[in-house]
Amino acid sequence: MSTIILAVALLATMHFVYEGIVLPSIRMRLRDTLFRLRDELRRVWIDQPTKCNSQVFLFLDVNICHFLSDLSLLTFALAYDTEKCMANNPKLKSQVEQRLRAVESCDCEEFRRIYHEVNRVLTYALLANSGAWFIYLVPVGLAVCCFSRLAKAVKELMMMPPKQSQMILSHQVSIA
Image (tube, helix red, strand yellow):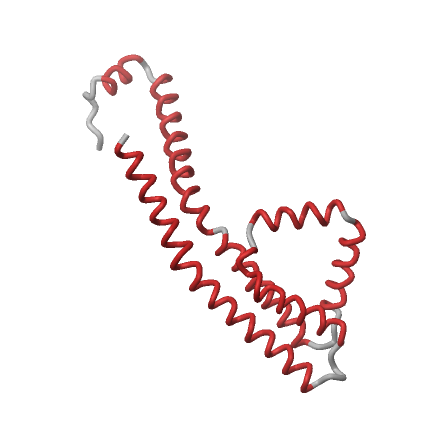
């Protein structure tokens, strides 16, 4: 019982350290990257306004600014809700696909590069925001792995000839 209490206390401490110390640092670095990308986007727009599509600029600029303040909301649950919403709302899905085509077909290479880099940053934010779950999933995964190995050993023991299984059961087999 005390082992379980210590394990839970260790998990809680690890969760606190991750959510309270590590994750805010990661988010700050990601937010700084988004600010840099937004500034690059605006610089390209100022330097080459005729080369770049104003609609694509607005899509990117508005959404980068939106995620600067809502970076902490990106989680697996939000990704799931987004998929569900897209599947249930054909009008929204069509609008998103139209915007994606506009960005991908944009003549401005810098806009496309910035778009892909923002996606990479947001994906990393989603993984980082969900990182505390891995603290809980790793022990479960290890337990499942150990259990499957134990179940395999029991199955092998059951199918051994009686003489060999009796030797193993009485600890008379040397492990070499």
